[in-house]
Length: 278
View 1 (cartoon, helix red, strand yellow):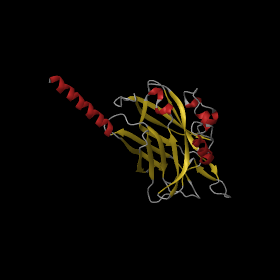
View 2: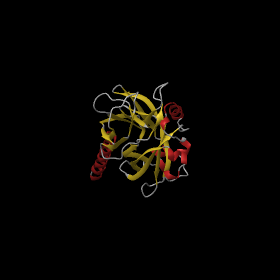
View 3: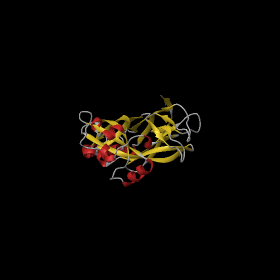
View 4: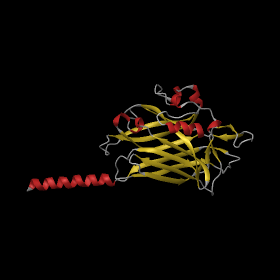
């Protein structure tokens, strides 16, 4: 009888553990949202700096589910990639390079920002495992997309985009990673205001490096106020704009919006009212 009770107790504990995992969900927060002060307009864009960040957690304190797609947009901020030098995606993702400073001169001239990502990695069948994997980001203006994702090539040729270059080595991360992903811009509206939205899919090599599940838990990114001259409308003289520029807002504040899609297809959108930065 004692053996039966022990077996029953073990079964109950196992069932409760499975239920806890099944009920666990990712939680999301935009914790950094700053842009250059001002309003700007479509005819007179104002060069801007943008800083944003977000956190991903799990409701049961497990390693979060892997995120495969992101969409990031700041109300009334439009991208003007033609105002800055660029390089190809192939140059930006050069796997023989272990430090962004070693990239081609064309890519170094195309740097538009930087950042960091904190990740938790672990075996796919054990979400209690949380191996720290910290990486640095380099944001690079690119002229074409990732051949693995043909849509990025079409979208970047149409509206421009950036390569998000990721670099890390042990001991910062269990395995070395040196590559980029392609993130095109898309035209959207937030609060009815024209906005550029950055969209990207995380490739398997970054979502599951070395057979591990790699879960993003904290991101900080900064897009610098890099400027150049372009025509903002047909027939007009060239104007000074930023890689990101302010082109309007609905009220006194701006909203930054980040949409996350995990591997199950579950989607969640987090927003935050933006402050200002110089």
